[in-house]
Amino acid sequence: MRVFKFGGASVKDAYGVKNVIRVLEKVGYKDTLIVVSAMGKTTNALELVIDKYLNDKENLAHELLEVKTYHTTIINDLFETDQHPVYQAVALLFEELQLFLNSNKSPDYNFIYDQVIGCGELVSSTIISHYLNEMHLKNNWLDVRKCIKTDNYYRRANVDWEATQAHISKAVAPATLYITQGFLASDSNNFTTTLGREGSDYTAAIFAYCLNAESVTIWKDVPGVLNGDPRHFSNAKLLNTISYTEAIELAFYGASVIHPKTLQPLQRKEIPLHVKSFLNPEDRGTTVNKTKGIEPKVPCFILKQNQVLLSLSTLDFSYIVEENISEIFTLLALYKMKVDVIQNSAISFSVCFENAYNNLEPLLLHLKAKFKVTCQNNVSLYTIRHFDDLSIKTLQQGKTVLLKQLFQETVQIVTE
Ligand code: ADP
Ligand code: ASP
Ligand code: MG
Image (tube, rainbow, N blue to C red; front, side):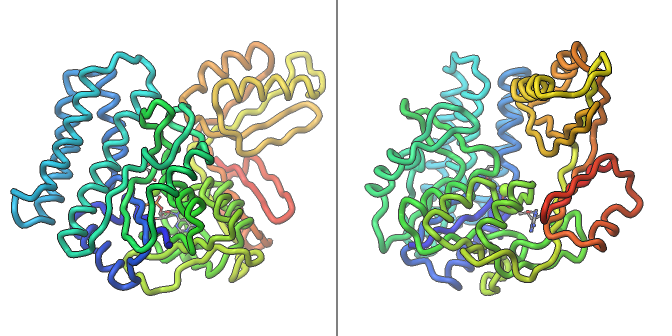
């Protein structure tokens, strides 16, 4: 089988959904399982719904209506008659969401998040499944929550591979076209869980692994993996092939075109990953496989914005030693900071991280009791893989460099 993943950008409107058909017709759809994300920016919109539900009930209905209206517009554009069963199927999903909001007693934000957010992928896959059927691409709609099982670490659940393998083997038969939801799964009590933001790529890899798929293709609004995000780096070049190891490195440093968890299951079974343009489906795009390094061999640029840079030194001017570093890391872990770079000298320790959970203030309070701390917000972290003198020089031009670290093929530069 082949596994395809269509992300939010590819199905953000009726034109996008129609284009999915065009892609399938061009590249074939027999023996294919399609994983879809929520349409456009629906996940962000549902995050607002959750926020209203918890903090501002008066505006909840309005926020929810925005999400419904957005999808209704797409359905109206796709289907000729308002008697089409898709209307009822989607209405039912919103009713289920409303029922949860009315009856939920749990105060656990992460639990609530997963129960609400799943609506995006459920609605999107339902609309697309109906539309494919309408256009004679007969398909089976699969509830991914009956296939992928996880623990109950809501918002970043961990896959139970054994149970998942058993469920997928039972649910999926060859020679059929399937459509299912990315990002979602369920725990042992059948509550919805999620695999982390942007997790639909990972869903595709999970299915591919369990089905021993021939390949995975993720369809993007870019020609493939480039040597830099075209939103930040002009003249970005297409990489034709990348090794699994190199792709894992790029994703680790923050190349957001592939979700970092996607690659390891594929590498384990040597399943190739294609990253291709949904606008030009016949172009080759990028293939990630067991080749070596990257081709063409060019420096690759990754930018992470809104990072925090802390520099710490001891209050009594003593050296920074193991105990201090261990204490600092305990606190960084406690406040769920995602550390990207560290650097230490005799008397100071610097760390650059992402304040993903908005915990900077309590962290600083804690650290300041033990250390002299300087903190710089909103810094940028650039990583260049396979750097050369010219790439470093060009990148640094006109920027104030706060920290720089070279390690084998990678340089990391923190700038103001
Ligand atoms: P999806 O619709 O699948 O969720 P994303 O928006 O998450 O797609 O990923 C595609 C985007 O990733 C591109 O529009 C591009 O801006 C960004 N991107 C970041 N790094 C790269 C890179 N190295 N090559 C190509 N695109 C990249
Ligand atoms: N819809 C989810 C998100 O926006 C998952 C995904 O698109 O991969 O994070
Ligand atoms: Mg995405």
